[in-house]
Structures are given as structure tokens and as C-alpha cells.
Image (cartoon, rainbow, N blue to C red; front, side):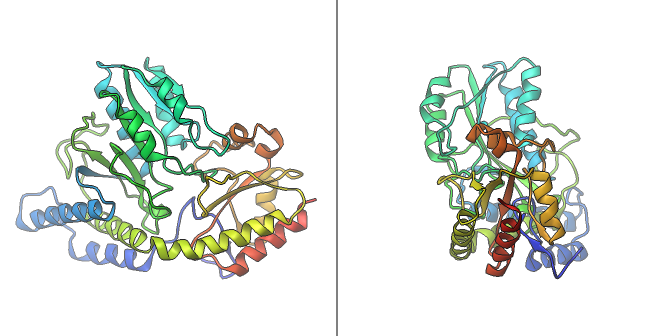
Length: 374
């Protein structure tokens, strides 16, 4: 539903589809409707087009040795990556490690595996929200088979030292490094080549909902979580959707190509936002210097988060209280872990901006928050 008066500041929850991406999907839906798993020439041509899209995705992300496995989104991709590698490697070891700022589709997988007898450790972190590399070194063992650390934390926006983490993990030959890059790709430059299992979703980068991917280093073995025969990958059954695949490739292409240009716009808007929030009495900024400019987590400590979100919504301003897939509890666990403040955790909202955001929208948000903050 469109609204000319809507001020949308929840781009980390989802993004509007880019018209170019949408046109790619519509055109492919009209022209290439056959099942790529079929045997006739048109189907084989569709399969070739999928393979071409995969090659271009690898090129956009500067990867050379990763298979592109198409999924319904990042949640499925995270489940396939984490459960798939843990169950495949459990004869080697059952020790797995995660960061404390993971999306629920990651943490829930770790919870599931713990109930299956896996030993789970959660990393400690520095004051800026980045994982403690010395703690990671101490946790690593010969039976460690998986480490999962997201590229960017969805609620706080802290950017993790992915390259340094990769080097530590790979000093243990049995360990695999997974990173949920859903909030990182298209927002910040990050080196992906050192990550064994990379997950992403199209709808975070102005693509369509219902498609994502797991990029798997060729040497990494995993067990499929959906069974039913060969498709575009042996590791994920189901009829491939050529239109969705092509639209995902185009979304990644645009997001990576426009990264530097968009960053300049977003950095300026972020500075305006931070300056304005600092001028409002009663506002506490929870995001740290390690955060990316697209995500700002802030607390108005005199007002519950749900009440503040509802008030802003009445003004036509849309933000999140936590990540869009969180449990819906009043307290933000991510904010509480970082700040140790119950008041900040219960009053925090996530403001996520885009290159589509305007200065007037930031001003309207600041005015609205200022009217209720004490």
C-alpha cells in the first residue's frame, strides 16, 4: 500500500523493489515460463540462464569458488547452512560457536542443534559491539566444526571484523565459517572470499521477497534440508524460479555497483540524524562507532519502545522496535547485552535509512521524537 505521506525509515526490515529489478522479473515471467528441470530445449536454455546468473553473482561479490544455491530467503539459507554443515560434520565434532547479535533465524538454528546434543558457545564482545577476537581464539577447539558471525548486526548495525574472524576460524582445519550477510551486502564493502557459507536475501537490497541465496565454498559439505531430487543444486530441491533468480542477480548487480555512490548520500543523512538526536534531551544512541550509517539504534528512556513506535506511526513515520523477525518481547536483548541498561533496552527503536531517504524526512523524525522526549 502506497502513501504519499509515509516517511519510511525501516529499510533494514525490507526495501521497496527497484523498478529495473521488477521489470526483469516480469519480463522473465512472461517469456521463460517453462520448468528448468524439464528435458526439452527451452528448459535447458532456462537452466543455462540460471547458471549464467550464478556466474554473474559470483562476479558481483568477487567470489571464485562458491556455488550459488537459490533459496526462498535468508531464513531458509541460514537453516540450510547451519544445520546442513553441523549435521554433516557431527562425526568430527559437535562444538559450534555463534556471536550474541545474530538474527533469530541463526540463533534458533543453534538452539535446535543444542537440543540435538551439540555444544554451543556464545562469543563475548567489545564495548563497540564487535566480537572479541581473543575470546574467539580461546573458544576454538579441535572439535569446533562451525563458527557463525553475521557481517552486520540487524538491530544495532555493528560491523564485524569478518576477515580477522575468518583467519582465526581457518587455523582449525575442521572448522567452517558461516556469515549471515543479509544486512551487509549492498550497504558496506566487506571481503567475502574468506567466508565458507554466505547467506543473503533479495528484499533487503531492493529486490523481490521470496528469493535469497546460500553461497557455499565448493569444498564445504552440507546435508540438504529440503529433499526431492536434483534441481539447480543437488543441495536444495524444488522447481527453480528463473524470474526470481534473474531478479536476484540484478538486485545484487545494482546494489554492489551503486554502493560507493549511495554511501555518500547515506553518510550525510546519518550525520544529520546523529547530530539531531544528540540535541534531544532524553535520547541515548545505542549504536556504536562500529555501526554502519544505515542503522541507528536509539532509546528515549522515558517512553516504552512500543509506545514510541505507535506514536511515530500515527505521524506517518515508520521505524522498528527490534529486528522485524524478533520475538516481539518488550525488551531488546541485543541492546541490553550491549548497554546493560534495562531502561535503554525497553525503550529502543531502530531507525534504518537509505539513499532514498531525504533530509526533510530526517527532520520530521527528529521533530516528532523531540516532541515526546523529556
